[in-house]
Image (cartoon, rainbow, N blue to C red; front, side):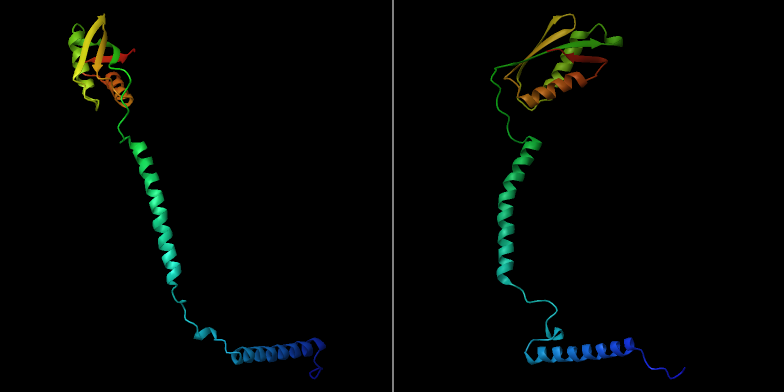
Length: 174
């Protein structure tokens, strides 16, 4: 069976392949006759568009001018670089209880005064008028004039409660 005739599928496939080749040649010839460029004749990178580049630069500058004040304000709020408003009161009063331990147990007045002088200087506000007096056994009242802004009050309270110098500890009670 060496000489069997080709099947209909084989003949149809060869005919369609030939027809496709002819159509491809005709289409290619039609494109070149029409004057269009071939892919090889086009530049790899298209030419620049100066108007589009100018618009992009203008948009970036405009966006930056709008964004910078917003970022500046957010940074100022986060770092508290703006001056705080002055309190409505003339003075700030802080009441705290002092406890001493060990060999300093009898000298509460000296320890309270030392703690107060250290902590009043931890604030950013000018507090030249800062007085301390004892109310009763280990409870002291400090008065600062002019009044401290809220952030300085937080710093003062934290200093008093965190200080642990010369076996002295204190708690703000009011």
